[in-house]
Image (cartoon, rainbow, N blue to C red; front, side):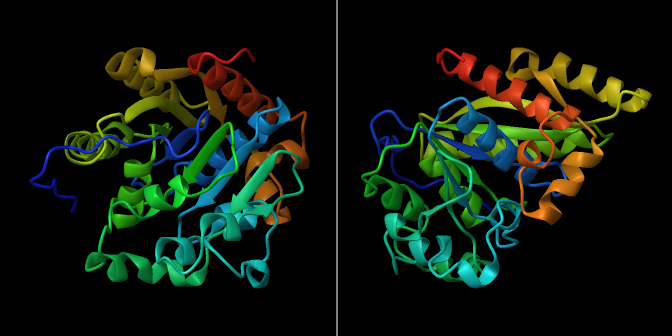
Length: 274
C-alpha cells in the first residue's frame, strides 16, 4: 500500500534537460505492458528518437524481449536502486540503433522488502536519473504488475504514465486502482505527474466484447485514450521468444504497424513532429 508523506508534495525535477520520462504501468498482469514498452521504444527509435528503457520488473521480460541473456546482466536496475552502481554503469546498447536498456536481474525480486526500511525509498530511481549525464529524448520505465515500491519509484521519477489496458471485461475495474495510486503520488510525492495516455491492447475485432470495452473506456476517459488500438496479433506474441521487438521480427504485420502509429500519436501529444 502506498501512503502519502506528512510533508508537502515534492515536485520532480527532470533529471536531464529535454528528456521525457514515461512510466508504463498497470498493476494487472497480462495486459501487454512490457510488449508495449519495448515496441513503443523501438518505434520511437525508428523515427530518430533516442530512447532508454529501464526494466523495473523482476520478471525481466523487457530485457529478454530485447535479446539480452541473463548472464549478460552484470549490472542491473537492482544495483542502481540499492546504490551499488550508477545508472550509467548499468546502461547497455541494444541491437536497435538509438535504443538502450537498463536490464532487470533476479535480485530485483527482493528489492520490495529491502526498500521498506531504506532511506529515501521512494526516490531512489529519481536520484539515479538525476545523476545520469547522457541525454535521451525518452526514458520508458517498464513497471512490475503490482503497486509496490518499485512502481512507486517509477511514478515518483516520471513525468507521465502510460497505461496499457487490455480489452476485457474487468479492464476498467482494474485501472481504477492505478488511477487512485497516481492521485496519491501526485499529492504526496510528484505533483508534475500526469497521465500521458491509455492504450487499448489485445483488441480482437471479431469479438464484440473487445468493441464494447473499447467504447466504454473511451466514454470514461475521453481524449486520454489513444486513437491507435493494438490488435491481438500472433507475430506480436511470437517476437519475444526470438529476443526481438515485433518490428524487427515482422515489420509488415499488423502489430508492428500499430506500434508505429502509436509512436506517432505519442510524439504528437508531446508536441514533437513525427
